[in-house]
Structures are given as structure tokens and as C-alpha cells.
Length: 397
Image 1 (cartoon, helix red, strand yellow):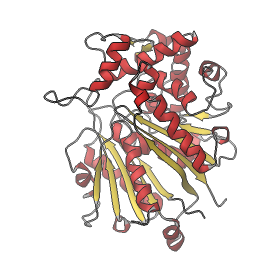
Image 2 (cartoon, one colour):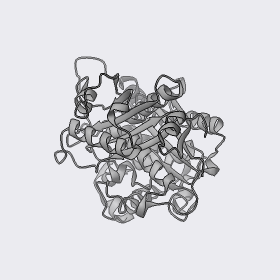
Image 3 (spheres, rainbow, N blue to C red):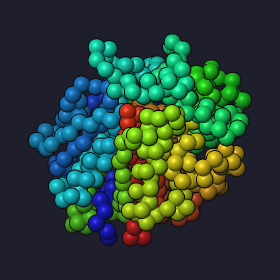
Image 4 (cartoon, rainbow, N blue to C red):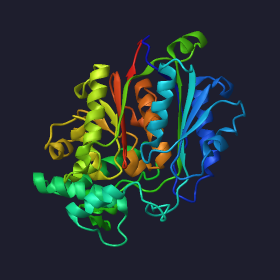
């Protein structure tokens, strides 16, 4: 065994459209129960909990976990936009690896409403105010009613198209692949197949983006139990999946220049990935399965290059050659990703974690990547901004 934190258990519930889920606290409690059951530990063994959500009152984490018991443990509520779930996992891993705790629960959930994400407070400066200013200066003020997130990622995709000459229809292949993967995922919201023509014919949103290239608002929950190697050995827990390396980055000065790809996190992603590769000793060429942040098809394309899965300027060939799916070089988003599985903001990072743990264990059923998998890579990005990249490794087998 190594000294790396062990992911002893994972759990999630099927994602659903807004209005069709249980309330956030019940979703969160169920995901936590599933993770604890998978780990083989009771809630009374948990020494700390980090609970992520974006849309909810303070101490919503306690509201969810009190369904499992009132044991007096520290419960820390986490909010980091779309990277919230991975931020909770980052803190849980730190707590274990620092020796502060032996058993830590990371939980994420979100109960969303239909439609595009809206600003919650209008009487104070918005957290994305500077991002809005850069976008407006570089690309112009978007039309009224266009979802704000789509303007950022749509503009970044448009810039990439202008710089490389890529056919915009290449982006539609990402959605087609996403739906094909999600067809084998009982947790995913959208499982019906789509063609490139259907994706391109769906309602135009912004830049090259059409409706089927955008992730939907979703409700759901996911969790992970992170333990120390010594605790796992002492209690006979499964210890074959560890966090080999993990890095979190926030925005650099380069974010706020005139490059839209940098504005949406390219530099954060690239630097976090570089740190993870260096720390783990595992490079992108060694990774055969990845869960990455495909909030829009344009971000999946940019992330291929930021993570070093394909050289800069070659993402279109990577996609058209099928190198991003089964039978190719690296299976990206076997779960269906955010576009098809859904994107309940606080749960997304931990849902990615669950998928990769299942892949490394050989438990992903119809989504299982064939052959031996020794490492799996996770990328979770939030505007505003934060990016968490995590390398999972299978050990002892």
C-alpha cells in the first residue's frame, strides 16, 4: 500500500430533471448511505464530512447528514460553483493525508430549478463580473436572454473554430458520443441516441452551440468515503483505489486577457493536470479513461488539449478518428458526461469520482472499458473560478 488516501466507497443516485427529484436533503442522505454501504463502514465511523452544493441555504449539509445521525462531527459546507463536488473531495483527501482524520465523507447534491442558471443576488457585485467585462470587450455584449454560461463557452468555441478552421459540426460528434455512452448508464438523464444532424438542427444558443450541446439543469447527489490506508488495513476495507495525485487551481492573470479559451479555464486545467502528472508519475499517455467537465461540447474539446490527451490544434481529428471513445485511445466520459448524465452542480465532481472508481474496480457494467485499467483521470471545472484534477490509481492487484 501507499500513503495515498483510499477511496473506500462511492455512491450516487440516478439524476433527474428539476421537479422530478426528492428534496436535496433526502437525495444527499441516500447518496451518503450508498457510499457508506459500499465502503463497509457506518456513519458513526465518519470523523469529518465535507458537503458541497451551490443552490441552498447555509448548513444544508447538516440537514442532509442528520438523516444518518447526529454524531457531533465537523460538517463543512462547500460552494465552488461547478467544481463544488471535487472541492469537497479535495478537502476530504487533505484531511486524511494530513492525519487529521482516518474516515472522511465527501458528499455533493443539488436541487435545481428548470431553465438556465440565473444570478441569485442583484444588490451586490457578481462573482463573475470581471469575466463578463472581458467577454463583452472581446466578443461584444450578448443578446438579452442568452444563458450566461453559454456565452462564455460558446465564445471560446467560436475562437477555436476561427483559429483552426475546424468545421463547427465536429462539436456535434461529442454529443453523439455522449448519448451513446449514457445509453449504458442507469444514472443518466438523457439516454436516447442522437445523430449529428439532430444535434446541429436543435435550437441555436450562442456561437457554435446548439441546445443539444449544452448540459441540462439537473437534480442529484453523489458521495465518496475517503479513508487512510492504515484504517483500511485495520478494518479490512477495500483499499485497491487510491488518489495518486490531486491538484486544485484558481484563475491566473492570463485568464483576464483577450483569449476566450483562457477565460473559461484552459490555463487552470492545463496547470492542474501538469501538477497531477508530475506528482503521480502517470502521464496522459498512460490514461485510458477520463471523466472531464463537458458542460458544453466546446469545453470538452478544449479540455482534450488542456489535459494533453491530444496535441494542441488536433482535437477535431481526435474526435473524428474516434480516439475519445471505446476502441480509441482514451474513453472520455463513459458515464455520458454532464451533457447526457446531467449536471447537478454540487454532485458532479463526486459523480465523476464514482464512475472512475467503478471503472477501476471493473464494476461499470455496460460502460466498462475493456482491458486492464491502472489509472483514471478526473477533471472538474467551475467558472469564477476553480479547477480540480484528480488521478485515481488501482494498486495492490
